[in-house]
Image 1 (cartoon, helix red, strand yellow):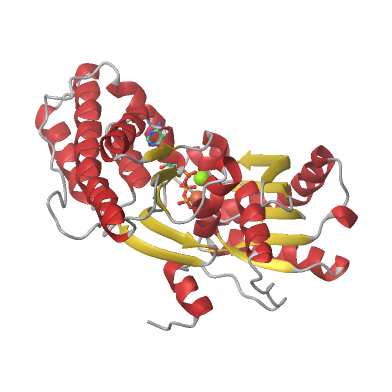
Image 2: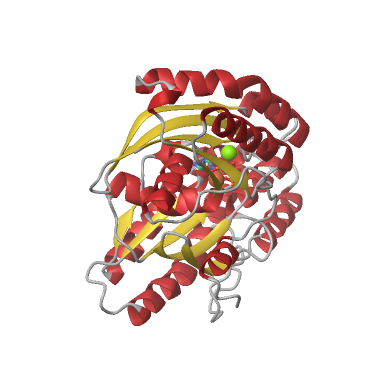
Length: 355
Ligand code: ATP
Ligand code: MG
Ligand code: FE
């Protein structure tokens, strides 16, 4: 089947056409992403109203472009999938309404997709991974460790109790006077830094739960910077390197526990896998940390191409295709966007477990 995907939950407008063949293999036929980075950079963060307007202006053209690149027309599409949460409500309305309009006009089914489900299932599109596996989502808005058991069947094992990891990078960059988005800027600055200089906190290390916390780290960075006034370029490099090292140590503990739990709970899985998703997956220190952790614990470490780790519509189209193939029902055209929509709640609703 061919499915048209639409993604507008944050600051990327995206459209994609994805094919899922009879064997369950996926391929991306046409994929376009328009980042709104420039619109927001002057404000040091995403401005919801600007984002919603930018989605309205770009989306129709992007859908046409995705169809064109795929060499198909709407007639060749079997279903529409649009992100309907979680995310910024203005953007979600734009994408979901567009999806509904196309579904209504063409009579094709509409899948209202959870953005997190898109991230969770991407590794099946790129690497044909089988269930169950673990997924670490590290982006500007989320930091979650999720057990992916099946289509529509997810368990959230850990989440951040305060800032998301990407947010911690962005806030740290901001208070050091580095440009937005902060992640790449902090990583660049850290290259020439001494990671041993500052002993930043490693929140929740040793905690039996699998949650994350990053706001204390950001506060420690602020205090370090204030104690140094005036801060030199070398100081900034050292702070960034030490910041990344603290994150690496924290993740080693948190994710390490997750891997062990997976091995205990799913002892029969021959080759367990950890998948990473989200913009922070670009970070080389994070990648090296996870790779080492996986090697040590006998896990495959799977990092999809970066363009599919960050927000895109191919993952939304693919999630729609997976739902269709799993026999899950399409959505009614009165389905509403949801700014908050935890993935495991969705699973509970679908499975009727009502826990
Ligand atoms: P979400 O997908 O959760 O709604 P988002 O759009 O903010 O949120 P992404 O676009 O996936 O998420 O990722 C953006 C985040 O990734 C930003 O916080 C950015 O600083 C961070 N990031 C990007 N590159 C790097 C890097 N090299 N190192 C660390 N963080 C990075
Ligand atoms: Mg983004
Ligand atoms: Fe995302």
